[in-house]
Length: 221
Image 1: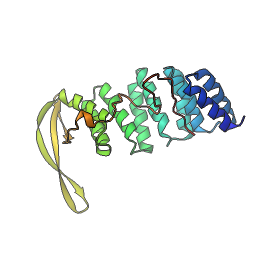
Image 2 (image 1 turned 90 degrees about the vertical axis):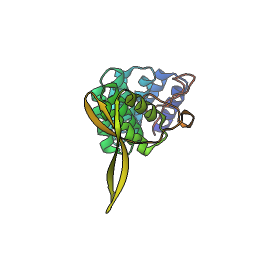
Image 3 (image 1 turned 135 degrees about the vertical axis):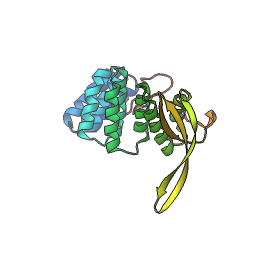
Image 4 (image 1 turned 180 degrees about the vertical axis):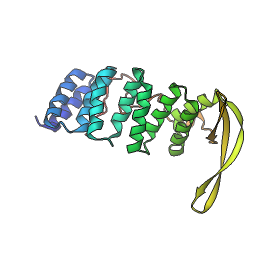
């Protein structure tokens, strides 16, 4: 079997939830194309689906070593690190990912989530603000940002200006206090729950069905 046949067969087994069989085909494909970042990511996904976080990590790391601009391993690797309590390392990973992919909304979201879990409230709010600037109906960012701000003391509204060429553009900001320090967040429109997208607490490249988490696997070409 050639690389494509091995990879396709592995995907079929992964979709059936037979991760060990899928991994066997992915590993054979990796031997044929060891510099293919997608196949390393696929092997990592077979461990991810079994919540074998530590075993998945080196495969995602190898995928990123081969291709630092490959977005999916940043997400899945970050989730693995968070699950084993390495949130600082996850934050460092997300920051590295954003150096390569500065407009990736899901990496920004996961960065905000990791900051939130570490109690870095102003930083987390700023990350979720950036998510909402790119995706105003992002339900996860709306939910987490609102939850964080409800724990802070509201200090008032302020006006600030951003430059757009030779012009000054007025913006409205909200001032909050957290642990004795003031911080500024943007004033955004409140989205009704019915308008929100499905809320995903922590995002990865792997799309899971509602019925069984092992029904599907994210596979890169």
